[in-house]
Image (cartoon, rainbow, N blue to C red; front, side):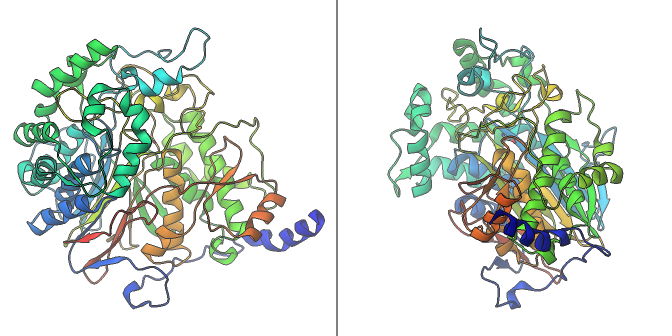
Length: 593
Ligand code: GLY
């Protein structure tokens, strides 16, 4: 039986490596005319917002209608998610934003570009990334999560105030809006303030999610009062304290968060509860404009988030896989899945060993993306056999992964891809007294002990050790794809912890190699592998044939819960846009302008 399978594999798996020139990209088509595809993206004659929660998408779409650009729409939607999706939308967390706007941007006139220029000229416009990742407080130390036995104290690393890094979301959203938005911040935040003050009907998803997180929320008296018992679906959730915090930010910008009553309450909670964040940590926090990472994939420029974001690993994966003829071996076929899984393991090996915050540790970005290095990795892929990870480890992610991603297209073709997170759903479950918002537990994304797994099963290295002022390595990788002539095309990204990068990879391969439209590309079943644990996680929908063939190649497969939520948009060549909310977590459709 095994011999027969191997013979079969020799026939199936060998064509993995393209023999001739690389397969050209699928020609772009107007998917609305393609009646044969099983899924349909939402269409808009103008712009469109694809966020996980429909009231937040509607908030962004309303701002586009008022004359806002993609950045205004993304900021409006992100603040609305802090109200309607408290498990991931946030004021107390952080994230990354990648944007492209046509023409010269207003950032220089607004005093945002003193010194080094982070903007990247492409397609008659400019792309830039905003790094608003949370930052370790000044008193943080490399060993702060080790217990007396020298092992990581998981409760301290994830459920205490020590697990909170200095939040970046408010600084990042305010910076993006001030430098690249078109409307006043107060106008952009108005929908979020309304949703918090007037309330909104609780969805079944929110009610269920609060019930699932109840043990953690119960442990904090402030969170208990704000969120428990979980409201019955359909009842109104009003958040007066959050509305007041949002009003302060709308009036004063980031000073409304990093100074004054919000800052006092946050620091007071830290002092009483054993956390580290001080007033000077809050005052020192800066969101940063950074140059996106760029690499071509089959003639299409792909721009994504540099470290500490996950884009470098995404570009490595695209680079390793580019010459493989995945269209010929086929979507969901064992040979394609094998090539992808082996590439994932190799890219995660680099990630775990070498990546960290480039402001504090040297990250060899150019070497890791060089043709020679990518070819070296590619050569390690045996087309017939899985290469086992040197040490097997069984640790797995035990927590849900609640980050959230939104994508926006405006009617001028402007694009914004924004991923934001508290790390776990509802962060560490602890809320700031009187201010109505939860705190992140992002310190767990650092390496607490080299080689020991974090909540996502990632075994990271010394480059990602805890140090004052350092930003923890992230997998978040908001990504923009351009047409070969440079015009903007796709904005995508995903939540999912360590699965973020592989989710985005598969959305791009499905759209650009396998010819699925945006909705089908996002909906198709996904796999994930990250070196440790040494196995492929596969969603429902992988064929039993492929599973058997992969097992014969030496892979271990696990049927995994749904991975990621890649809410994506696409600018149509003739004007208008398409968008899709990932059906895995969709609470409603993408909302046209
Ligand atoms: N907190 C998950 C990530 O940033 O990758």
